[in-house]
Length: 75
Image 1 (tube, rainbow, N blue to C red):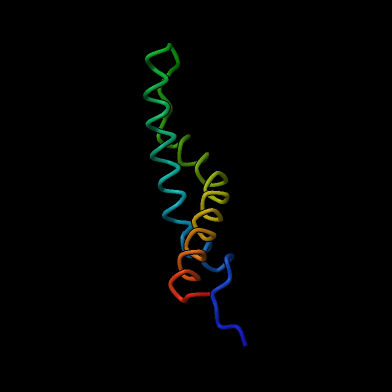
Image 2 (cartoon, rainbow, N blue to C red):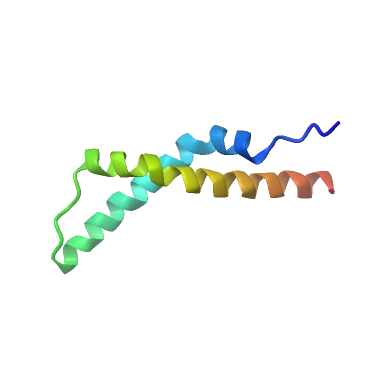
């Protein structure tokens, strides 16, 4: 029986951290865009956008952690 954690469980576990990282990066991008004439994003807007955008980031983090765990096991 395979007792490895599946990628979706790892992604669910890492979602909060991935969505937080996406929120920080979106906010910093919004601040950077002020230099070319765009308005700064509201923090609430950034948090709303980071929810759905955190899903692919969490999936990518889950794949990366799965790879690291497989590499550590020698599989």
